[in-house]
Amino acid sequence: MKNRALSMSCLIFCLFIFFSCGKDKIKGSESCQHETTLNINNNHPKAAELSAIVDKYIAKGLPGINVLISDDQGAWMTAQGLADIDQEIPMELCHINKLGSVTKMMIGSLVWLLIEEEVLAIDDLISKYIPDVADRITHGNEITLAMLINHTSGVADIATDLNYNLAVVNDFSKSWTADEILDFIAGKPATHFPGDSVRYSNSNTMLTSLVIEAATGEKHGDLLQSHIFDRLGMNNTYYYDYANDFPTNVLAQGYLDFYNDGTGIQNISQLNPGSGNGYTGVYSTVEDLYLFMNALLREESLVNSNFLLDIGNSFRVSENGTWASSIGGIHDEYLLLLPDGVHAYGHAGGDIGYSANLSYLPHNNTIFAGTYNYGTNLPSELGEVLHDMRDEIYLLLAE
Image (cartoon, rainbow, N blue to C red; front, side, top):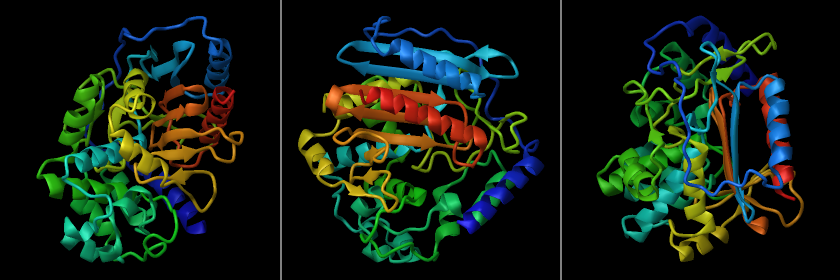
C-alpha cells in the first residue's frame, strides 16, 4: 500500500512538471444538441430523486455528469454541469466521455463473439496464440484466456507500475503500443499462481487484445467496431489511442484535482494512460452505453444466451469482497453496498480524467449508465465525493 501511495505521489508531482508539454490531441469541447430514439418518461418515479443527487454532487465540485436509467417505467436521462470549464460549455447528453475500464466488458463480449465464430476457445492457454509474449510473463505458459478475463491470471498490473506511470507523464499524449507496455511488466513477479485468486489487473485485458489480434489477424479495435459498435448502432462511440487528433469536438474535457488540495481542478484530457490497448480507450455517450447493455444482458441478443449462462456460473469474489469477476468481463459490483439478492452486473470505469458506470440490475430490470468527466484512478478528495455519489445512485436504483 505504501509503494502504491509513493507511486501516486510521484505521478502527481510529474503531472505538475509535464502538464504543459506536448501537442494537444484533444480539442476544446463544442456545444451539441442531443436527439434520442428512446421512449423518455419525464415523470419517471425515480427522476426527481436522481436529479437531486446529481445536482447535489455538481454543487460539491464535480465538473459534469450524464445519467441514464431505463426500467419497466421507461427511460430517463439528465445532463448537469460543464463539459468544458474554460469555455463554459454545458454538459449535454450528446457529449462523449471516456469510459475507462467499461472498455474491458466490451472486450470480454468481443471474445465471446469470436468464440461463437470458433476463432477462440475460453480455456485455451494464451501460449497457443501469443507464445513469445507468454514466455515473457511470469507463469505465462500456465495462463488461459479465461484467467485473463476474470482477473485470476496473477499478471502484474501495468496501472500500478511506477516506471510506466513516469513514462506516461513524461510524454503524456504518446500513443502507447502493447509491445511498449509489455516491456514494463515482462518478468515482474506474479501476484499469485494462475487461477488461485481474483486480483484486478489492467494488464489482463491488454494481453487479451493481443490474443484476439493473433487469432484473427485483425486489430481488436476494428473488431470492436464491426462486431459491437456498428452492429448495435452505437454511432457516437469511438475507440481511441491518441495516434491522431480525437475525431470529434463533442468530447467532454477530462478533469482531476491533481494537487489534491481542494483549490481547483485541472484539465488533463491530453494525458494518455494507455488508451487503445484493451484496458481503456472506448469513448461514448450514455445512450450508446444503454444500447450495449440492453443487447448484452437485458435482451441477450449480442452474446449467445448459452454462453451467458456459462458466464453467469463463473463468478468469483475478489480478495477484498467488494466485487466478483466472470469469464465474460462482466462484474457483479457493489457487493458490500447493495442489499442481499440485488446484483449490479456490469463494469465501472475510472481513468485519469474520466469515470463511468454501466450496470444491469435484473431484480427490477434496470439499466444504469453514468459518465463523469472527473478521474478516479488517482486519489483525491473530489474522487471520494464521486464515489459517494455512485453509492447513492446505486442504493436508489436497488429499490
